[in-house]
Length: 337
Image (cartoon, rainbow, N blue to C red; front, top):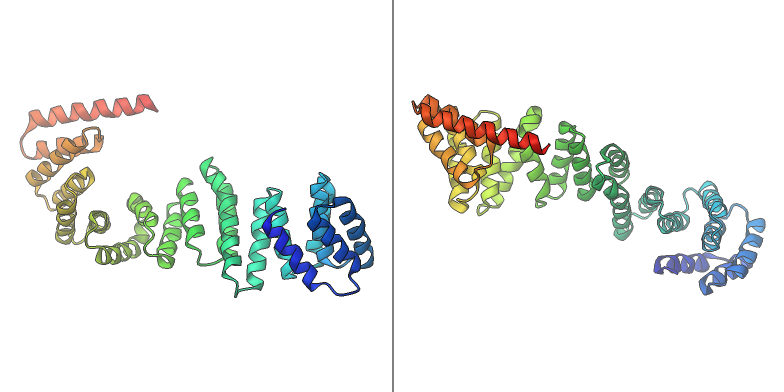
C-alpha cells in the first residue's frame, strides 16, 4: 500500500464516528490488506450511508486491488458524485486516479483539493506535478495540441505556476502558435524571473512575435542588468533591439560585451554583422560574418550574408565563392530532410 493511501485511510478513520463501525472496520481491513473483509464491511457501509464519499473511494481502492476495474471506476465516480467538494474525498480520488494511471483525472482532483486547503502548499505542489506528469509524455511524443488542452486546464486551476506556464509555452511553440507561446513564456518570467528556459525560447522566435517585442525587450534588459557576467544576457537584449530595428548603437555595445565574455559564440558575431549591416557599415559587417563563419562554417545563412557584403564592398570573386558554399550547404540540408 502506498504511503499516500495509508495517510488517507488514517484521515478517514480519524474522521469516522462511533456509528460508522462498518466504515471503520472496512478501512482497518484495507490497511491490513484483507481485501475480502474490507469489501464486506465497506459494502455494508455503502448501504447504511450511500452518500458518504469516504465509503465509495475506499471501495474503489478495494475493487481495484481485486482487479475489478469496472467496479472500481463506478465506485470512484460515485464518490465524486456524492461528495464533490469534500477535501478528504478529493484527495482520495487524486490518489486513486494516480495509482490507476489516469493522470488528468488525478491532477484535476488534486487541484480541487488544493483549492479547498490553500494553507497546504504541498497540496498545490502535488497538483502541479500531476498536471505536468500528464502533459510531459505528450510533449515528448510531439502531441502538442493534446498537451495544450491539459496545460491550459492546469494553468486555469493552478494560476502562477512557472512549471505549467513554461510547459504550455513549449506546447504552443511546437504548434507554431508563437504569440501564445510568447505570452506563456512571459508569464513564466513574471513568476520565476531566474528560470533560464523562457528567455532562450523567446530569443528563438523574435521574428515571429512583433507585437510582443516591447515586453520581451524589457524582460531581456532586466535579465541583462541582473546578470552582467552573462554573455547570453547581453546578446539576447541586443537581438531584441535588432528585431525591432531600434537603438543599433546600443545593440552593438551589448554585442561587444557578449563577445568580451564569450568570443567563441558564432551567433554573437553573426548578430554583430546584422547590426552593422543596418548601419551600412558593410566592410565591418563582412569581418563579423567572417568570424562567425570561421567558428561555425556549416551555418548557411552566414555565407549568404557574407556573399552579399562582399558584393557590396567589391569583392566579387569572394562573393561568388560564398554563394557556392551557401548553395552547397542548403542542398545538403535538403538532402537530410
